[in-house]
Length: 199
Image 1: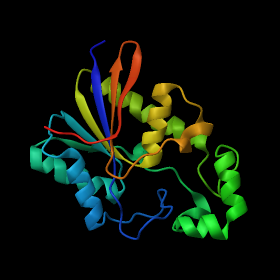
Image 2 (image 1 turned 30 degrees about the vertical axis):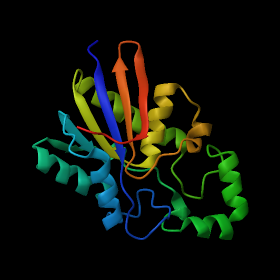
Image 3 (image 1 turned 30 degrees about the horizontal axis):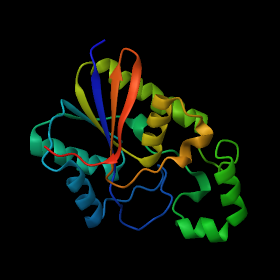
Image 4 (image 1 turned 45 degrees about the horizontal axis):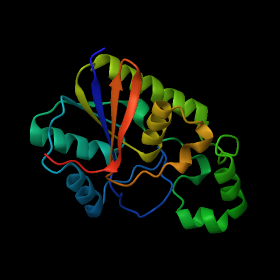
C-alpha cells in the first residue's frame, strides 16, 4: 500500500464562547477562531484534497483555504460533531455548575452516561470511522486535510491507536491544532497532535 498522509485540523474558536455545540448549534468562527486556523497552517499548502464537516465553523475556513491555494474542497456530512442532546447550546459552566452530578457521571462513563438525547458514542465513532476509511481508500497515496471538530479528531485518533471509546474525552484537542496520521500497510501512525505546520 502506498502511504497516505492525513492532516486534521480542529476548527478555531467559534463566536459565542465555550459551549456545547454538537451538531445542533452552528455558530460561525470568531475573529480569534479564524486567526487560530490561519496561524496553524501558515503558508503550508501541500494537500491534494481538503475535506470538511458541513458545519460552518469548519466549512468556511476549508473553502477559504482551498480558494487561496487552488485545492479542491469536498463536504463530508459524517464528519459533523457528535450530538450532545440537551447539552447543546449550554456553556461549560452551565453544565459543570448547574448539572454537576450529570457532568461528573458523564466524565466517569462517557459511553453509558450520555446527556439526554445525545448521540450514542459507539454510533458516532462508527460513522466517523466509516467516513475516514473511505477517505483513505479514495485518496490513497495522497495528502489530505480534514477540517473537523474535537470529537471527530478524537474518534479518528482513538481508531488509529486502538483506544477505547471510554477514553475519548481524555484526549485534548486544541482549537486550530493540527493532528497528522500516516496511513501505511500496517495501519495508521499518529505523528503529530495539536501541532502547527510550516511550509
